[in-house]
Image: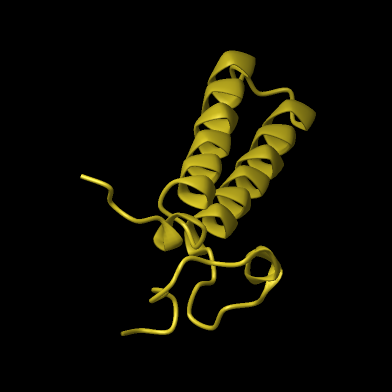
Length: 85
């Protein structure tokens, strides 16, 4: 099997171990998108151009949800879960 799919249930210290190949790409990507979006929105506000605060908040909430779901459900931690059905 690949190194990030375990053959046995993980022990407590295994939750803190660095596993090669299990780098969470989507949360990092969501954070990068959020930072770039905030930089663009601040730039628009400083230049006195109209940019919706609600649009900015909606995008940031979407980035936060993407990062959270990718990290806890489909990310490296979710790969160690087993199907019970």
